[in-house]
Image 1 (cartoon, rainbow, N blue to C red):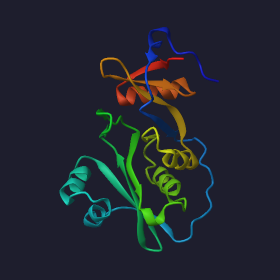
Image 2 (cartoon, rainbow, N blue to C red):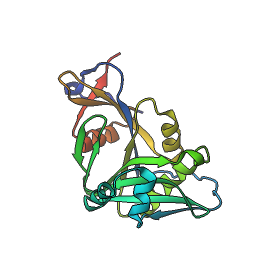
Image 3 (cartoon, one colour):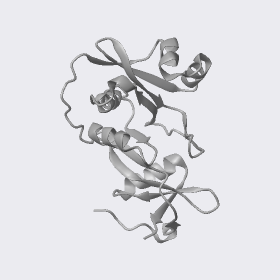
Image 4 (cartoon, one colour):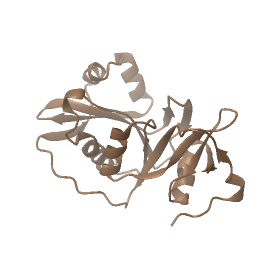
Length: 202
């Protein structure tokens, strides 16, 4: 059962939410997904291939890796079909202009794409679960998406993540997050992002 937010955090969060935040903590349930025949997930080593798939300059891909981001690549019957990044040091939510340090024991998952031809096959949640298993030294994982991206929300929840809360833009341009259910996890998420924990206006 959710707990009331502390009095000092009872701020009205105006306007539309900017997007949700989700988390998975080591020890949380990991839903059993049917095996997708031919699917494999690997830590991407061919950075030129990743640049071609993503449309990013090769130098940008290399810079991400040097900054502590790990790229993962999913293949179906050997064909590259999806990719995503795991931040281990620093991360940002570019659309919101939020930059933050990834605390020890945490991972921030970002920039996931399933190539158009391969969408609708359940690749995204399976890629996420493979990363949770491979990044075994981390205890807490975080991921988000733009507010209207329902397809991403479905894949994230199917993989076993739970909603932490909604991010709102506050007066003056700062950001706050309203807890979805667990106050403990909402506080942890707000601390990670360096934003306020607020109560959404009703």
